[in-house]
Image 1 (cartoon, protein in one colour):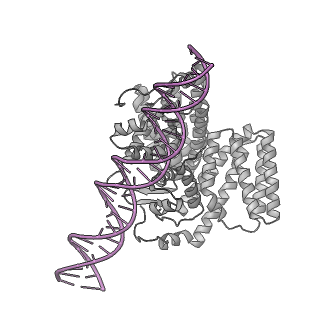
Image 2 (cartoon, rainbow over the protein chains, first blue to last red):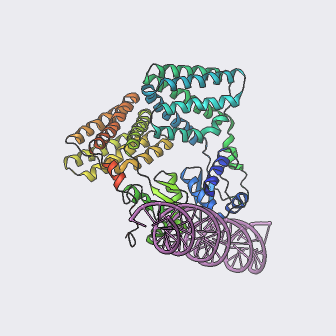
Image 3 (cartoon, protein in one colour):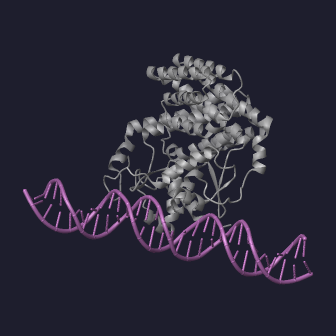
Length: 234
Length: 234
DNA sequence: CATTATATTTTTGTATACAATTTTCTTGAC
DNA sequence: GTCAAGAAAATTGTATACAAAAATATAATG
């Protein structure tokens, strides 16, 4: 069955933005993108509408659409919200998780552990994501699962760019196991707390990273805005 | 500043869908809507893209866009997620709320109480919404606030259609006060639990409503896809 | 009459044309 | 050289034209 061109474009643009293909605040050139995708402006513009609604892009009337990467402050908030969302998932999962789902969690954990031993960060990230997603699923609330997954994806690039302090991965794995234990015991409050702090660590680490480096702030000022110098949004 | 036509259309359509202007599963006729808004199809279609991303509408290739009202099962999930989101807001608010914000909460509560006494449901709903929104704000996390607000708006029509059991409003007001007390004391765990169950009650009530009436199920079978009536919806 | 095949109409998806607005470039005065 | 005013170019927003697909109507066959 034929797929709408616009839908493909949404996915691709989403990927491009999430992987940092565009500089922050960069204007997305309709015409260039249309040529790049080999279509007219119309489907590109329709994709823009969707992207704006999902928060990846900001649209300013008669000026254009600009990538809208969250700044340090916003990222800290998003990590905190992520921690709360996951805590909620864990709370519900502790009451509803099935034996199969528990096994899947343990399996993901085992692969994760192996990846840590082998210093294989690709495997680690993939299986870590599976672990978290399984918990969202186990909440038994598909709406919550969807929202958690959405935010996870949004934060993925920033999670990945965090520095991996020596020993943090081992510590992280221990936390995973403690979380599974709480879920297995049906201790919802405990599972909730453990998962919250597990995720919150990432936010804090990110915060430190930002505070130390002032990386993003610099990027924002000197940012490689292509042509127009002062046409940054907001 | 000139506002894009498309943006106004999004807002209006959103309102129309949320207030039940369209039957569930009804196809939105591009041409009719374009005429109704006095524009061409283009801005209407751009609005559709946004609506789909916000989940109010489903787009099927070469078939059209259809209103997508959540069914009973999905609504129960959404209320549960709402409870968890609000619980998270309360948890954070208990640690961060300011004196001013506490006063604002108390004020909203007082007006709410008055509305209950006068059997003024409009005032009640408005001030109740303010109360909840103030807690989102007091979480100090604008991302969380935004998400909670979004879901609140999505659920608004269903919250409103709940039957108001005698005495429930009084009980609800007591819960509000208990929540404020917990926030004032900085007891985050308590505030969180209280707000969660306060909201969860709505979900349960809705669940009962559905189970008793089978209203939505009937609507879904018989209601949808009204053949194109003659002229504009006016 | 039912059923299937075909033609007609309608509707969606995309391209293009055009108007409105902003940005950039040019010119001229000081 | 700097700045302002205005023309030119570029870009966005909307309307329209056209192509592709689906829905509907019509005809043909048994």
